[in-house]
Amino acid sequence: MSFDIFNLSSELTKALEKNNYKTPTLIQTKVIPLVKTKQDIMAQAKTGSGKTASFVIPILEALKENKTQKKAKIKVLVLAPTRELTLQIAQTFSNLSEYFPKQLSVVSVIGGEKIGEQLLKIQKGCDIVVATSGRLLDIIGKKQIDLSTIEYFVLDEADKMLDLGFVQELDEILKIIPKQRQNLLFSATYSQKVIDIASKITTKAIKIEVEDTSTHVQEITQRAIFVKKEDRSELLRYLIKQHNFKSVLVFMANKRAADNIANKFLKKGYEAESFHRDLTQEERILTLDDFKNKKIDILFSTDIASRGLHIDDIDCVINFDLPRSTEDYIHRIGRTARAGKTGTAISFLDNENLNHFKLIEKRYKLDIPKEQIDGFDFTLIEQKKQKGPQPVKGKRKSKKDKLREQGLR
Ligand code: ADP
Ligand code: MG
Image (cartoon, rainbow, N blue to C red):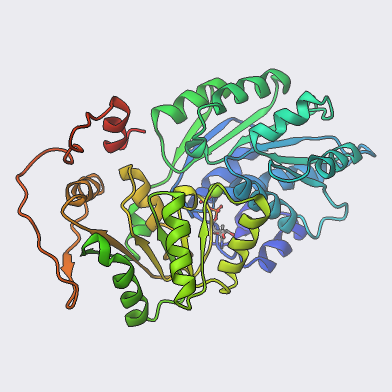
């Protein structure tokens, strides 16, 4: 099957070819025709399934027809959870409209960068705004943006809108944009939170679901290795050398751990960097670019990189520390084996986190062999069968923690 089935314009077809989009993904075959019917859509499909193009393609096709005004008016507003995702979406709009006779103006509205340039572009007139909610509200507050002409409102990666403040920000944005609009919502997973967010935006969305995580996960070789906490760095070096991994994404429990270990690896001569929310926007972009371009071999990251980002060609994802929420496991390992390639995901286990790992396995119906590697001594303490992970001594688990463990948050 090719993109021909959608009867797209020659300009768009040419851009799809240039970007190597030959066959539409499943979500694209479902969403693209439906967007054209002007209905609201709530679409769920796993990470990496091509959700972005599923709304970018039909929106661009519609905008191409519509070339009346001299000064462009904002017709499309896309909200995305992070600055990186915002930039990626804006880039997709630009890439796929490259051959349009009249260039569309796409503006990214994101924090961490100077506001002046973004304001200037908006004032000059633009067709498409891709934004994170915080910065958009800053600009709305300055009365520098006219959102009264919005025709399409897109919320991408709804399940990653993790900030508690997001729902409030969304409320404010919804007050300003026209009630008459087409709403397109996308999410990798459904949770109560996503449903709550969606219900604020539209009550008449058509729901589209595409078979979950399992298909992609099949291309990932999942391993679990017992190792003492203090031996993890050494095991990581051993694995990189043994398998000749060239591009490794290592998930750490927190920013400090990511910084510390990246420094240690740098000193040992690896091209290593850390990636987390404390970096400036510029640093984040640079680091990701370097990782994509293979200037960095090992990226030590917090869960900020576990969702949404597409860096193709990652050989291996390492869970140096297990994710707190079971759901993040799938998001993390989904960073490898993208676009039909294969990949490896390795989790480091010990006596403390084994039960938590079993929860992850249970949730995703996995049964991953638990390995021990020669030279890395490890004594497994037989554990009593129990339902949940061992509570930390002297500390009662909060309700929030319990929910998180069940993957409900
Ligand atoms: P999602 O938002 O569902 O996680 P993305 O929209 O970010 O996925 O797409 C993942 C990757 O797949 C991107 O690199 C994108 O360019 C690529 N892609 C999307 N659709 C196609 C297609 N039909 N053919 C080839 N590559 C595609
Ligand atoms: Mg996406």
